[in-house]
Amino acid sequence: MYGETILKIEGLNKSFGITHANADINLELHRGEVRALAGENGSGKSTLLSQIAGIYGSDSGTMYLNGQVYAPKSPMDANDNKIAIVVQELGLIADLPAGINVYLGRTKKFSNHGFINHKKIFAAANAELEKWGLPKINFNRSTDGLNIENRKMIELTRALSSDPDILILDEVTQSLSHDNREVIYELIKKFKELGRAILLISHD
Image 1: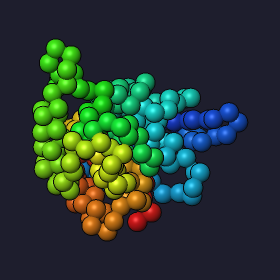
Image 2: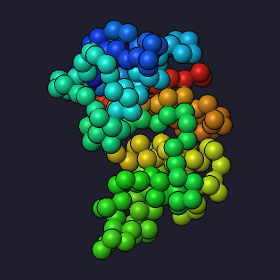
Image 3: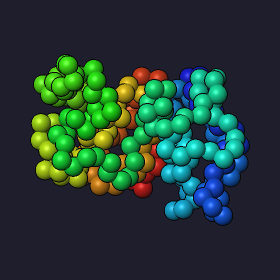
C-alpha cells in the first residue's frame, strides 16, 4: 500500500524544434513507490525525468509536488525541493577531488573565511556512504584517477547528500558490476521502506 501522492503530472509537453519529445504526459507518484518508466529508445523517458529534475523546462502542462505547483528552473531548484537525479552521462569535474564533486555548488557550509575545509567535506561524503550502504570511495583522490563505477557512485552520493524525497535514476546500473547493481537494488528497497519515492529507467 503506497502513501500519499508526492508528485502529480498533468498534461506535460516538451518539444525540441519540430520533434515532440513528450506529449500530454500524466503521472502520479506516491510515497513508498518505485516507478519504472518503460518505452523504446527515443520515446521521451529521459526527457520526462529531466523535466522533473529541472534540467529541461516544459512547454505546457503542470507538475504538483506535495499538492503545490512545481516548476523547477534548474537542478539546484529541484534539489531545494528534495528531488535529485543521477543521469547516464558522467557530470563530474575530472581534476577536482571526488569529495568536492559530491558537494559541488554547496561547499559554503564547509568553508572557513573562503577556504574549503577538505577534512570536513570528505567526512560528510563518507557519512553518506555509510548511511546508504554504498561502497567505500577515497574522496581525497582526484576524480579522473577513479574508474567509471566509482565515478557513478560519486554522482549517486551527490544526489543522496541532498536528502531527497524523490530520487531519479536514469540507467545508472548500465556501467556497474553485478555487486554494485545489488547495492543499487538495496538502496531502492531502503528508499521505499523510508516512504520516499524513486523514478527510474533501467535495462536490467
